[in-house]
Image (cartoon, rainbow, N blue to C red):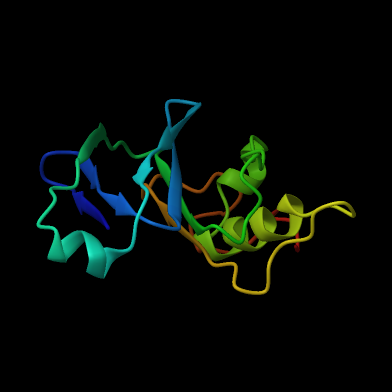
Length: 134
């Protein structure tokens, strides 16, 4: 689960099972760690799940994904791509994560949340996107 608090500028992340994440803030990617297990089994054992609290800025980008994405995927660092709509970033992550040796699984899910910063590839009318097509 990820919760964004815009008032305090904090992202709260607590993961169990097959969901992982990476957070980009200030040009640096950091992993968000999930605990192994199954949500229902964890609830029955009444275990607490650690919550990571990370700063959230206008340039932050959150990528959450299921375990269908290879564990060693490389986050994008292309400035134009990172300024695109989060759906375009998610499609590019999905596209770029696979290889001939390790294809992306059929149960793969990628979700991206952008920080709400200015998109440099758009003019004031919202037109003029330089975003690549995945």
